[in-house]
Image (cartoon, rainbow, N blue to C red; front, side, top):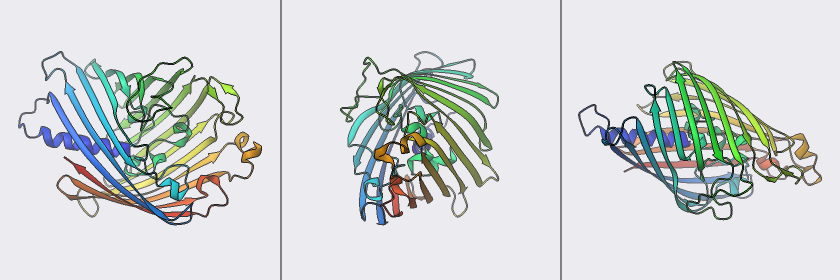
Length: 372
C-alpha cells in the first residue's frame, strides 16, 4: 500500500506539473496527500471495536538539471505525519491490517540524493531511504492495505529501513533492457528504538548493516519477476532462544503478470533463518482487476500466510501457539471527486497471532485519500 500511496502522490505531481504546457522537466515538484482510515473489528479477535488513523505525506522532488544546478541529479525529501491507534489491537493479527498504523509522529521520512549515469541505466542514491520503495515491491500488490502485501513479514520482522522509520543508505540500481539489479546497504538499526517519534540518525556500536540485493526481469504493465536476499549484522538478542547474535538472513521470490489489460495476478514467497526468527516462511498472492466499473478503479482479493518456525514453537513459552496465521483481504479502490479517492476493504484473519484462544476475526475498513 505504500506503493499505491507513492503512485497517487506521483499522480498528484503530474497534475501540478501539467500546468506548464512545455514538456521540459519541472525543477521543483511538490506533492501532498492526507489518508484517513477507520477499521472496525466486527467479529472475533481480541475485542469488537473501531480504530481510526490519519497519515500525511508531503514530498518535494528537485531536478538539479531543470533547476540549473548540475545535470543528472535528483533530490527527494519526504515528510511523514501519523496519528491514531492500531486496528490490530482489536483484530489481534500479527501481519497488521493497516499499513499506516504506527506511533503518533511527524518526521523527515526520506531525504536522499540520486545521481543518474549512462542515460539513466545506472542510479546511485545516498541518504535516508525506504528499502521497500524499491526492494520486495509489486505494483499490483500495492493496492491492498494489509502490510504483508507491501513487504512480507519474513523480512519486516527484522525491522529494516521501512515504514515508519528509515535509516541512512547507499543504494545502487543498474538497468539493461528488461533486466535490473538492485543493491543496497542500510544502517542496521533505523532511528532511535527508544524514541520512535521524530527523525533520529544514529550510528551506534553494534548497529551493523542491513545488506540487500534483488535481481529481476520487468516490463511496464506486463510482468515482473524477481529474487532477492538480505543479511543483517546487527548485534541483538535472538528472538527464538534469547542468545546474542550478530548475523541474520533471508530471501524472497516475487512476481506479477498482467493476464489482460485489466486483470493481474501476483505472488510472494519469503524465507528467513528459522533458528533466529519467529517467522520462517511467508506465502502471499492475489488477483486485481482495474478500470472495470469506472476509469481509475481497482478491485482485488489477496491472502497472506505467515508461518512460525519449528525452533520458535519448540520453546516452552511458545508450545501452545498455532503454526500459522492467514489474513485475506478483499478491497475496492475508486476515484470519488477531483483529488479525492476512496477505498473499502473486508478482512478475514484465521488464527490471529497464532493464538488458539482467539476466534477468527472479521473486520471492515474504509479509507479516503485527499490530494492537496
